[in-house]
Amino acid sequence: MKLGIKIYFFGEIKKDKIEKWLDANFKFGELKVMLTEVINRL
Picture (cartoon, one colour):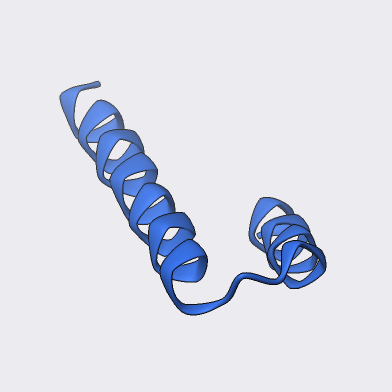
């Protein structure tokens, strides 16, 4: 159970970092939406 929480927690951090990186490097809303959809499907 703890392992599952850890994996979820680290997954959320990674997702947040990816989103922040995208915001910093690209200011293209459409690209971010497209990539977010791809990430959500994984």
